[in-house]
Length: 80
Image (tube, rainbow, N blue to C red):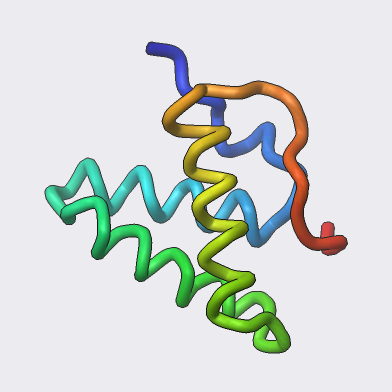
């Protein structure tokens, strides 16, 4: 398993979400709790986002970076 290093993720919010999810899971937090915490973290970066939008993006990012270990860019917000 070769996960994408968080430092290669361009968006700050995406990098924060992926890093937080990994660290929460490594510390023993269950998947759903880690996911929910990351959706909250996304909304801290983007308070204008709805809960549904935050959950969708967080799910896509976790799937891309953690589950599938994707290396390419992802869809998401326009921030840097």
